[in-house]
Image 1: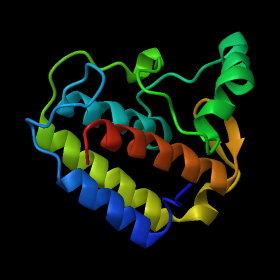
Image 2 (image 1 turned 60 degrees about the horizontal axis):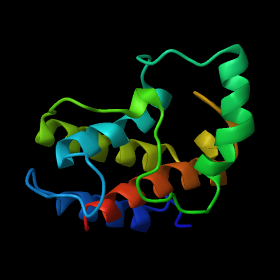
Image 3 (image 1 turned 30 degrees about the vertical axis):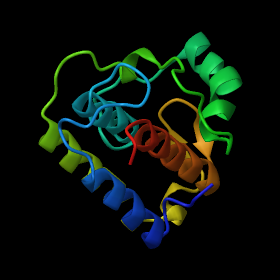
Image 4 (image 1 turned 90 degrees about the vertical axis):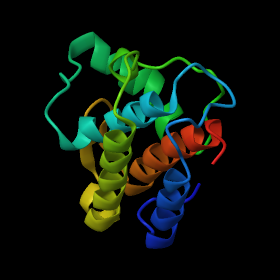
Length: 150
C-alpha cells in the first residue's frame, strides 16, 4: 500500500484528482464526480472537523470489532461496497469546491506527517498506527479515483 504521508505519493494523488472534470463518469457505481469528491471529504471531516457525531457504546464497539480491519488493512475495497450513513452523498455538490477541499485535506495530511497521526485517536476506530492511518486515507482515495478512471 502506498504511503500517503510521502510527498511523491501525495503529488501523484493530487495529479490524479486534477484529471477529474465535472463530467467525469464512474466506471462502476452511482455517484457523480462531485458526489464522489464530497464523499471522500467525509474521511477528512471526521478527523479535522467537528461536524459528525462520534459513535458511542455498542456502535463504537461494532466499528472497532467488525469494520476497522476492512478500513485500515492493505486489502483493497470491493467495487460497489456498502458505506456508512455519514458517507452517503445523495444531493448535487459544487465540483470545484469539493475538489479544492479534498486537495487541501490531502496536502494538510501529508504536511502534518506520519508522526502526528501515530497513535492518534480516530473518529470511529480508536487509536491507529501511522501505517493504519496511511492505509485508510490512501486506500479510500485510490478506490474512488480508480472508480472514476484516473
